[in-house]
Image 1 (tube, helix red, strand yellow):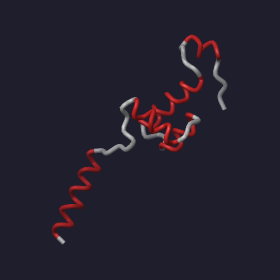
Image 2 (cartoon, one colour):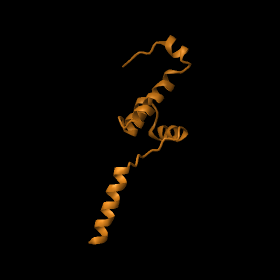
Image 3 (cartoon, one colour):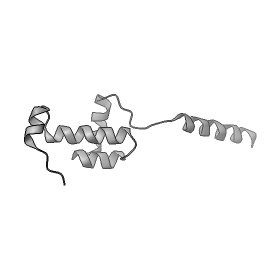
Image 4 (cartoon, helix red, strand yellow):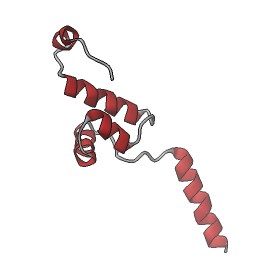
Length: 81
C-alpha cells in the first residue's frame, strides 16, 4: 500500500479517493485492469465504477477494429455453411 502525501493531495486539489478513481479509470482505459479490478482499486462497487465511466464518456466495452474483422469473417463463414 502506498501512503500519499497530504500536501501533494492538497496542492493538486484532489482527495485520495478521487486520485484512486482517476488512476483506476486510466488503467481501465489502457486495458491494464479489468472493470472489477479497477473498481476495487477505486474502492467502489462495479456498478458505481460503471457510472463513473459513463460520466467520463468512457465505454464499458471496447470494440476494436480487429474484433469487427473477426466478426465479419465469422458471419461470412456462417453464410457459406
